[in-house]
Image (cartoon, rainbow, N blue to C red; front, side, top):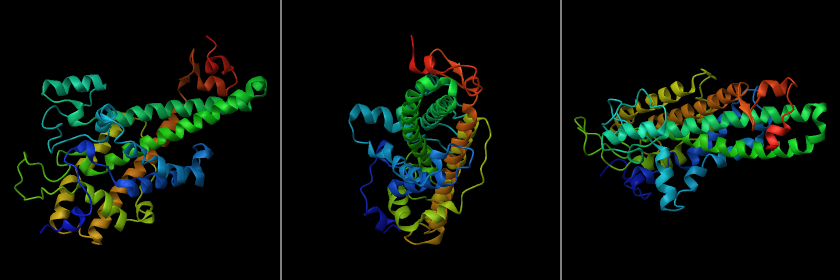
Length: 335
């Protein structure tokens, strides 16, 4: 009997990647909360409250909780949670992952040439980058609105600025929840691999890695029963901001893929049996990597937002902060 059989019988594991939930609720909650707790003082204060910590723990799970909403919903969204890379850095053995195609349309063209598509191969990097670009815009609006509220020359519209700021903070938290989830997915090695649920049948397996469906039991029951929030927080890396989000996202996913072989070696050695310290360390480390990356991306977006334009017609964030431009016409959209 397989070493993982106690875990396997504990959960119904689906055969398709679109049905697999990265980390389960416990893992995503720990990642989201650890990242918010670790934010530096430079980001807006409303993100550094205990309320924000609690909210992020729940919002980080929302992309999984929305699964099952319908065929169209699932077909379009489920592939955002993964990308199937092989050991040679190719997507399902087809086109190379790097350099990353500029858009999803370009990516789809590459895949179609190999008789694949992004719903088979996954589009996780694009989902992360999409949410990052939106987060940067959210922060840009937040900067403009807080500057507008504080400027006495624009007090006539202060009530509207305040109500719009409340709306923006709500939108910002929802977007952060999506980003937390997607970045968390990327820290789970089986979400960036063709070997996402046991070593794939159509790939050579000279080392005899398990072909059992181990994805769900590892990220859900094992994490829930063996990892605690303090184990994740204590393993988080120092803040690192690069200024090049596309490169850091692709590097992040490649680094996760490099943990696929160590994961299967760990399973083969019995390290994923309940309570084994090796499995605990591996799971805690991967969760900490995801929490660190999520925190860092928040700071990346915050800093980049200063150089953005917002509204219609677009106005510069810096000009509003400097008091040069009343943002109300652009924000309220006086056509």
